[in-house]
Amino acid sequence: MIKNQLKTILLLGILSVLLVAIGGAIGRTGLYVFLGLALVMNLGAYLFSDRLILRMNGARLVTPEQAPALHRMVSELAAKANMPVPRLAVIADPTPNAFATGRSPERGVVAVTEGILQLLDPRELRGVIAHELAHIKNRDTLVATVAAMLATVITYVANVVQWGALFGGHQQSEEGEGGGAGGGLLMALLAPIAATMVQMGISRSREYLADETAARLTGDPLALGSALVKLQRLGEAMADQHQPQPASASLYIVNPLAGRSLLKLFSTHPPIEDRVARLEEIAADLGVRRFAS
Image 1 (cartoon, rainbow, N blue to C red):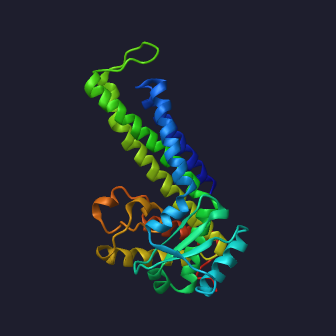
Image 2 (image 1 turned 30 degrees about the vertical axis):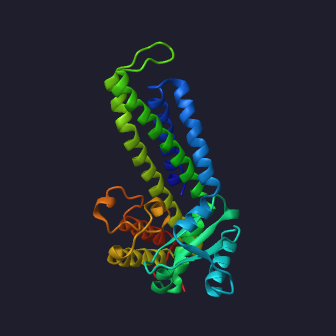
Image 3 (image 1 turned 90 degrees about the vertical axis):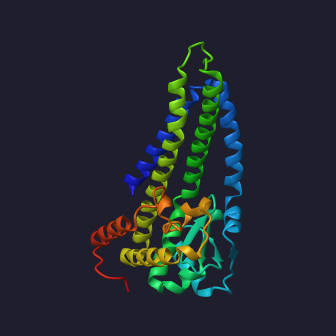
C-alpha cells in the first residue's frame, strides 16, 4: 500500500516538473494566466463532480427502502472501514460495472449498474463495493482532480507554445534569453502526451491500491478477483451494446471501453490479469485459500 502511495506522489511530481519545463517556453506571465484558468475550471469540476458524474451516467440515488440488501452491505463495510456511509445510486444499464465519486468521504457516492447486481453473487458484490469504498476512503477523486488540473495546464501551455512557434519563430523569455523554436515546439508536442501517460499511471496505481484496501477490508481477496474476471468477460461481450462516457471511464472498477481495441492502448486501468495476480498474492499473505465464508 505504501509503495502505491509513493508511486502516486512521484507521478504527481513528474506532472509538476513537466509544467515547469514547458512553462519556461512562454515565460512566467503566460504560465500564471493559464494556471489561473485551469484552476478555476478544475475547481468548478471538483466542487460539483459528484452531481456531474451521476447525471452523465444516468445514475439515480436509491433509498434503503428501495434497495435494502445493498444498503445493508454498504453500511456494514463502511462501519468496518471507519468511514461515513456513502449514498447509493443505481444505473439502468445491463453492462456490469460500478464506480465511486465525491470529493471527500462525507460526500461519497457508490454507483452500481443493474447488470452488476444480476451478474455477481453476494460475496463478489461485497468485494466490488469494498473496492469503491476504498476509492472514497483513499480520496482518489481528489488525487484524480489534482492530476487532471496539472495535465490541463500543460496542454493549455503546450498549445500556446505551438502557435507561438508557428507564427513567431521563437519566443523571448522575460529575462531576455532566446529559446530555439524547434526545441520549444518539440517540448510542446511531447509534454501533453507525457502528461496523459502520467495520468494513466496515477489511475492504474490507485486501482491497485483500492484492490488491496478492499481485499484486506473484506478478508476475501479471491472474491474480488472472481468478480473482476466476470466483469471483464461480460463487459467485453457486451461492448457493442453499450455506449459509455469516455470522460468517466477511469472511475469504473473495470474499463468500460475495454472492448474497443484502439482505446485499450490508452487504458486508465491495469490489466485484469495483473490485478487478479496481486489479489492472489494478498490471499496467500492472509492465508486465504478459498472464498471467505
